Length: 550
Image (tube, rainbow, N blue to C red; front, side):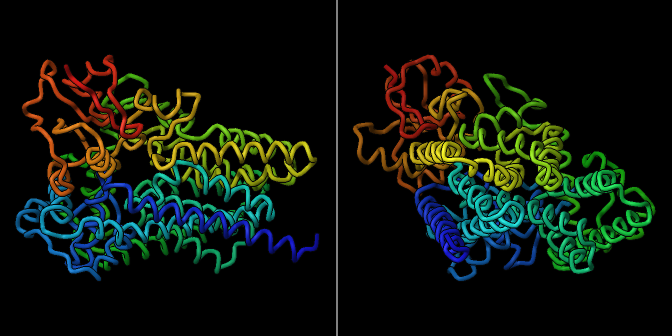
């Protein structure tokens, strides 16, 4: 087979995987209802662009919300009255989450707008961002491991349920995954060739990553750790190390400039407070040096958001894992949900790639570099007391998809090994088909499969509001009439918008006759927890149950 033929096969296979995945995301855009954070993000992005006001949803940076809000400028959207929502948000030290969520719900469901069209227009940029992430994984993996490695990495990306689940949602997880991967790759290029071109590109992609999600701040210590490790392994002289460190400092300055640009170069001062509600970062604002540079050192809304996220990770959040409830989480939460929410064939490929990297000397240096980048992100995530879903470690997946390409050469060693790879990929494809279109609720067989996922972890791992349209479709075709509907993630406004006829939840009593439709998350709350031991009348989706109370 000629090189030209191989390249044509490579391009055709890559195009099929990418376009097939994008088509799937477009389908899911139309069939998944709004998940709980999307209304907040898209309405925040819209207000950023139309009002140049960054007060809403400061706990996420601007970039992804700009992308989600931009298409809405082409729609004739009626917006809620500002005074009802922005007055409280004007207080810099107030968390306006409730106002932002109410604004998003009203914009979608109360003002006479077409909610499905708004979601469509906001989600298309997210699907395109996911497409770009897929192309990035393909290109980086191909450069590291060759065309076979690139295709293997892309196949894992395109078929893994977690990517299918989140690749079209108006959230920041895909954006930060792309930013994290690009930054790690540019750092690799810079360390091997410290040109000013690579310095500038490193600074730009780092800045874009920081504008995608605040967890990208992990990149700052990650870059320093990887720089030191690279210098020690390569036995770089002190003078050369200091030159590289100096250029990375320049990249950090470029990153800061990109962040400032993402907030419109605003120079409002960060106000001072005698309280300590921002924890560690509040102490920074009392510094005389910091106050001297406050107007330009960091955008005030970026600082507020970063403060809120750090406070959230330190303070914790109500979480559920393996039958346990906690407000401060578990250090092992992310390893558990990673092992549960990843398909078994992908876990096999990940494990083999790690082994192969260390067994094959020519792959060891670059493979261990990218593997270390994934582990650094995971390690920092494990320090968080806010355990809300595997989506928060999507950057780990992005890097591991690239690492997985290293094992392609191993499988190409003999006919038997090629057959084994075909079996593993066929298994992955069947897992994808089996869970379609309920990707967000996927759990592997190690943990009892998707139907038992609610026993492992809920929230965005399983039940996040994505099934409201499916509840409506079920009720239109079934004999279940006038049920109670306990769907934690969607408001009464959303249920009214989709004309879901139901009984008031205030009338619900366990001893009263009738049907109850409830999401898996609701089953962990009182008074519904007792129903977990009762027979299920039907399941609309893996995460939505129907009980007949007699």
